[in-house]
Length: 336
Image (tube, rainbow, N blue to C red; front, side):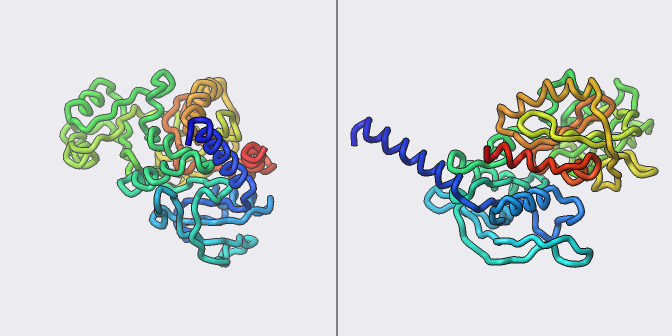
């Protein structure tokens, strides 16, 4: 086959692949088990309902059910019907179990929650093989390059004083030099899991905390100056294609410094501050370059503390506070 014939074949194949994907009536969600969903505010469920409203078929799978056959990535899917919400009743019905390839989907939403462990890494590496064959949100390459607690430090001027290390001397020096309470965050977890607060304690007690948090100084952690402004809330700003889709604030429960909803925090309506807008203007375009279209920024007292790219939540909360259905904007853009 000569070069021109090869070019024609490649282009025709691309056009066929694009037409096939856009004409597909299947949308896939790679996510946690359905039993883990909270029907009241699960963002994945909000997206599923909007897909159904538009006439698509819904397919759900877990990372463990992915496979690759001769370079084609697929999964054992559950074809779902989503039921009207009723307390104590299942929100879904399994219509069929099907073996499908990702390239036969109109779009694939990557919605698996951390921990970002070896299994998480492997499922992203497998999904990398499907790049160019189907639209994936977010791009697995972007997720691979975007550790949620490390990525903010690409914009150090927007972050509170922070050090990431497993070394005792580095962590102890940071705590001593700051002379303020320090928050310790494990890498790879979410929802406030494993986050602790070191206050004005004896250095030996601090070292013991650090030893436990770092698995005997072998695993890096994030040490970040505690921001008293967290009492006013931990703001979640949802971005879609680099622009603000909506936002809300999270307030910690009494006796708790973590504002995460999984840690008992409560969501309240919020407003965008000039500091928030600066963060969005700086970070949004850079995230979009990485293929990170659907993102949740965590902002405390005008400081960027985390960038959620694996399975950002908040659509139900935004819709509840401000009305409307912001998920429609996501689908409008995808299928424009």
